[in-house]
Length: 152
Image 1 (tube, rainbow, N blue to C red):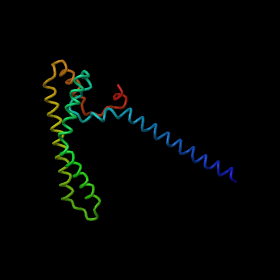
Image 2: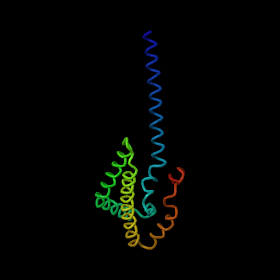
Image 3: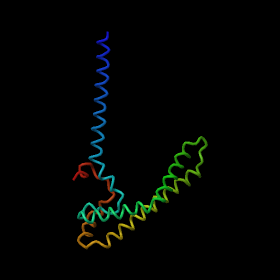
Image 4: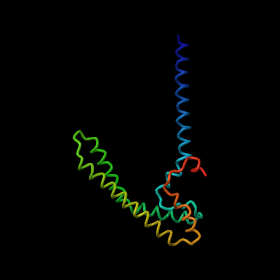
């Protein structure tokens, strides 16, 4: 009787470990195939085509912009939180939810406008040969690439 209990416990533990290994393998697969593309997909320029020095310069500009945009980011997060709480209320308030979504959308637009303007200013100071590299990659910007293309 005790031996059958041990067998049952071991069987359950083996099944749980197999499940855990599957989850870890699936997460690693998603990270490898989709992680890098989604991180930069919202940027207006594909700076991966540029030399390392220019890539670091653009990253520094974006980092400084992130620090300067903290109030907008906080406002957007507050509006998202408010929208979430409005959705969970027993009495649905359509106008208030629409206003919260409008604030989120406005903050998103303000952030995107700032990043786009920084990209324009960055591109203006690049040499012509580097702008050509950006121009070649620009039509593909924002398009979903299959996982095999993301690895290349």
